[in-house]
Amino acid sequence: MLERSIVGWLVFSAAACAQDPPNAVEQSEILSQIREAARAYVQNLPNFICTQSTRREVELVTPDALTGVKESSPGRGNLTRLGAGRPQSSDDFEEQLTYFDHQEKYQLVKVNGRRQKPGQPRPPGLSSTGEFGSTLDGIFDPETNADFEFKRWDTLRGQPVYVFAFRVGQSRSTAQLMVPSESVVVGYHGFIYADRENKAVLRVTSEAEAPKDFPMQDVRHVLDFGRVAIGARQFLLPLRAEMSSRMTEDFMKYGRIGGNSHLVQLRNYSDFREYRKYSADAELKPETEPQ
Image (cartoon, rainbow, N blue to C red; front, side, top):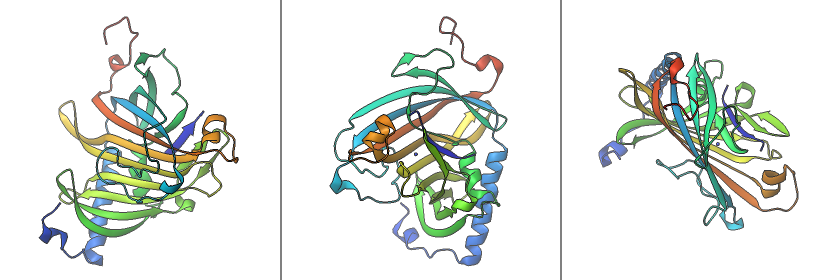
């Protein structure tokens, strides 16, 4: 299940750019191939272990900065920037992520560089799950019946791509926003960037359609995929993710809804690295033993 949660507390040449969009029949065929590639990706993910490193920032939102573009630009640090100035606080943590039998399992390793005891939970704050299958499955599952619209030709990290807008209605969605006091299933919309040659999805951007009275607003997520070697084979896997959300400072600190406190912008930047095949001896060992 795709989740966005806060616990305890998401160039071609000029000639190519001028290329006419695919007609309706071509768009349908392209989408069918992208959907087939995405479903095959989810079904064929191997069991593996990797390291997920996350840096989080909190920044006060200035009243004159509450407008921004809806779609993030390529690259790190390009989520819509609602605040102006330096982050008010930040932290970082490292987890071992085990993907086994299509399920994600997280084990906290370090917080701000300090080794943690086994079984410790993530530090309170903005977090997300679902990057390793649920994200694409939630968009392309036939039962989701997402709406798609061709937007443009583009390039991403030097690769020619199709860009399609999509929307998943709340009645067919499995995406959740969670805070300590409540959770809600939400619809969401965004963009997919698919390789024009092999139809693999290389990026997904999304924005949750949160109810107006929900404490978290402007929840946005960017997920980039790339080729990674696990053993002797190459797999398309997440490389990095960015997430942002807005809420009141009172709610972030004390869980209080309402009041006249400042708005704050929360941002997460996650990198996925050190992919390796899952095996029993690849699990974390006590610090006194060889890593």
